[in-house]
Image (tube, rainbow over all chains, first blue to last red; front, side, top):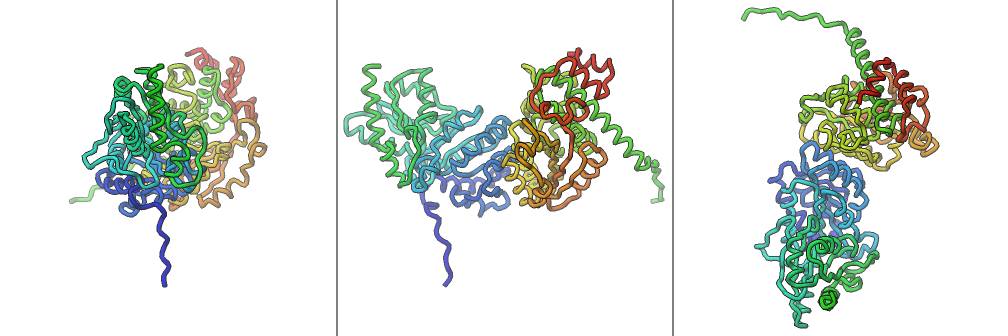
Length: 323
Length: 302
């Protein structure tokens, strides 16, 4: 009796990394210069699909992210289109390589990070990157993207390959809820109103968009009309849309699977402070590390679930009167 | 068709050619060292020790080994050179100026506000700089990426990178060393400017590198160990590296930090960013064979 290889846990299904890996494979023929860099976690990042479909353009770097990140600069310098893939937490160990050898050197290279935030789940605190958006957002010229669902991930994958410049994009480990239909479109730098409302705006990215929509349902039951904005591009942020939402709803909540410092919340606050100041509440991990557990359990434990977003919305609305 | 004998000019005998080339490279190295000292004097800061130690290596690369052309700096067929030890920027600028990639006088405005000749080389400022460096270890990895990418595209161009010895303490270098050997990058040649000194003290006081050649051999590189001021040895070793198949090459070039300026030689104090007094600059230039007029031109010409 032959022993079968164990199935990769969580590698299939409707996850953002799966959608990314498949999209990359499908787009490869359209982008002949595309090369994919891996640090021995292709099965985890979803690029095993690309390895299978385009082995000649799949470059193995071993478990050595600093070298991989900087080498992407060299690959770009000789005319290729490198996509660096690893877990978000390992991107953090190569932030300086991304800074000097990609962004400062003006390279057209993409970094795609799977396993961001509490969405990592059981691997626990050491593996849950809650600082990556802040770190990459602070690098001049770096575009930062965190799509919300598999449909958007496919579109965003094409968009970053067409875009000229360094990009940091988050995917996700766990099965993601569908937010969009097949007619969805994606444009780098543009936020989208997913659901309209007049009392408060919830600005979310990544897995928090689906939770924000659920939060809007909870708020509707309480007679509150919440607008939900999918802010898939965190940098450059859609300041015009934010200002309009602040103007029209008077209060804002940000929601992200990331530290409340320096991520989407920070970006939204920076933009609104200079355009249309209003009460803002921040939903995210409150300057602490994560822990083991299932993503949905962790979302409740760390205050990232729909209920927490709804409560934050009520707080923001209450602050309108005193603002 | 009738046979027509081709007239062939008798080429100069090889030793003669060699002597000419050696003399030319040695002269270039001398002029580069002078330029380096002058630019650091004007800047009021900069790293003289490690710039002077690698002058002969750079002079040989630019003078004989690299297929690069100032009037076609972006030719995709060119060889690539990455100064991984980016703090030796004054030496790179001097080499580039000597070989017509930039204006000599402009390159003397090292580290000045508004100057494209920053303290560490930046690709956006200077088109012939292949990638921005300064943070040790990164240039080496970028060069590896270039070598991989060129091979993937069936290019015959070669990639060269110059590392400092202290730089080898960066873990990234050994990630790259494993990677280049694994991918059999025989279009890749790394040179180590082994001057034995780093920022604070001798390598073996800070973090021992020896046995260095054995380390690279263990990583499955083709290793050569030579005198980094011996131009003939450099030329010979580059030729051998070019003929090596299936493996990347590393040249461990033993050098003297501050080479050519007696009061700097082998003194760690001259590694770091230092300010040269007028008198020190004059002494250095004189030791480097500059005439009184050269010295005046270099120091008062800006």
